[in-house]
Image 1 (spheres, rainbow, N blue to C red):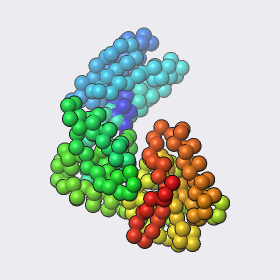
Image 2 (cartoon, helix red, strand yellow):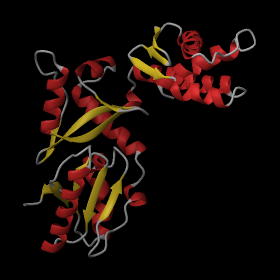
Image 3 (cartoon, helix red, strand yellow):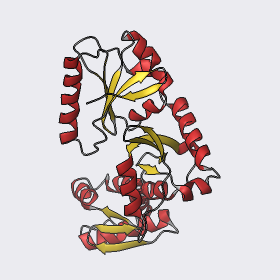
Image 4 (cartoon, rainbow, N blue to C red):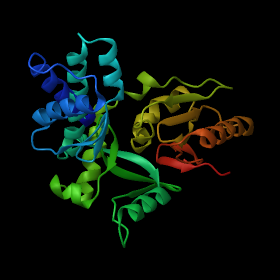
Length: 283
């Protein structure tokens, strides 16, 4: 559950607990104060502040009460339950965001070297913050991260130290967790017949599968030994089972279109599977 939801659920419970003694107000400012009291009861040791009518702050989070306020205006009987659900969700979001890292959450993702450098520079006030990364192939690198329902966050030296992991152990654990949690590739990827492009889309760990090259052997075999892949976005992998100039051109055109539109662009590099690992496909 998200921190925001936990926050809102707390507000709801406060309103529910006091519903008989204090009717829920229709005045926006008073309504906001009431929800703030509910949130404080649930969040307990976290500061809850009123930023303005229908706007609360829970730590660094901002909770907008417009939707809940509107709902209560339409359904007075269901108001307290709706407030409770909202507050609970907000507070849970906050707690999830501040929960200590766990070893079970460690994964490894694929990014570009330029991306890692940019992230390190953005995190450092006067000097880049060091981040773990390992060369993969071409301009791609492997990066350990912490997975959560809300976001995938970089795992750097500080987080690794908190988990008692060395850099090597962070990579080893992340890859082991991928093997354990990802469904078998052939359960999700169908062989691409001639003239068609296969795809794995919609999961932020689809590109991470390339860090486990041995798991692609069955797909390559099913395609007659030919497997060329592209990772144009951080949640997408496209692949073909033929190496004709026309097939490669069509894959490059698809990659170009995806990268022109996707907000989470990754790389335009095409990679060929071999038993020894991935190899760049010349332009």
